[in-house]
Length: 479
Image 1 (cartoon, rainbow, N blue to C red):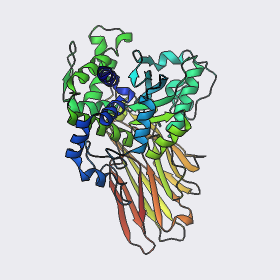
Image 2 (cartoon, helix red, strand yellow):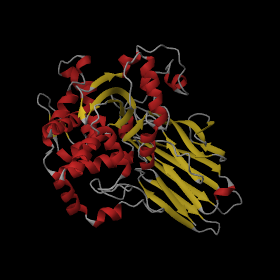
Image 3 (cartoon, rainbow, N blue to C red):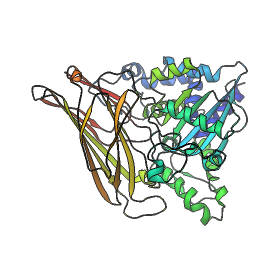
Image 4 (spheres, rainbow, N blue to C red):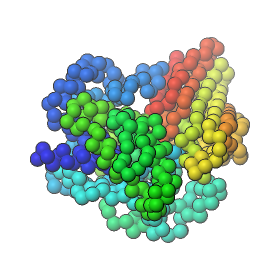
């Protein structure tokens, strides 16, 4: 029995994009006495202290990759325990998951372009058969061209019909998961899924930080945490041809790389397992892993932990979410630098807000991966906000409502080796004056670095509430 469990973990690790770090490491945490002892030795009472929610004026990302996320504990996390009981229970029932592999080097609203998807089946805590991996471009050929895509996929990207690969056009992962299921069945897919898991390419970076640089036999490249994702992108876009591989074989390096990573990770070392567990939790916090369950009770549990990637419809204070969508700019998000500066002024009868977005394209020449950057950007605001101006956009703004929010959308164009700024000015509903509370939600796969929030009180006093990268959702308050 112990051998079966160990083998299950190895398979999860081989299919690293299926979010298996979370599943395997937590199973071992629950079942190994030495794991609990190491956790106590490493963290002790510090775990309980760091497990508290981030204070209102403190930004996320304060902990290190191997420290505790802000809403997790090592031994008492109800949503995580519920997740593991659901997946690992030994009831003879097979559970099947659709895994969306989202490449955030080509950023999309839900995390990244869905170039591939996987199907994973588990029963009694073990993998059933080998995970399937499918190319979405091939699968989309089975979907009829009868559904109009959301704006501006047709207008700006020339896509005549909406299909699986563009199913994550919403900033809300639950919506994207249901849309992906819709297109899967429209393409005559036969599986009945219990859930959907979204994973960005940044999970590979987390693994390589643990293993150190890796060489794959038969390949010249070295994969490390700093450049591993881009090295892999080069191999599947350019390197395969130089090695005489066909287009159909261009992704054959992925299982080989996963095998090397698995062999480098010492699964018998409790310290390593704690690190795997912590990094998986941080990936959930960063939205590099997002989950959706068909079972309503499970979905509610995951929502309570903030792991479902849903737009927050419960808050009634100020709200901000910046959502970028790479429109035909190759994998240029890998070299883009973003920052945001949000200022709120309460000195007038009607609160005024200014959002300054800065985009820097650090690439100096066009190649197989980089180009002039084009993003269709949507900014979600509280319902009742009134836009007074949008400066610096490449087209006229468009307005709409979704998730109980108002949003404004516009095109941002950032040529090679240049910087562009877009300034959005608007007024806020008067009921947001005091006490002031701001919820900022992070887009999956993206990071604003830095993200600055300045608050000017009715008496004219200005306080900086936030000044650091936005690595997860955060709530700020001011008197």
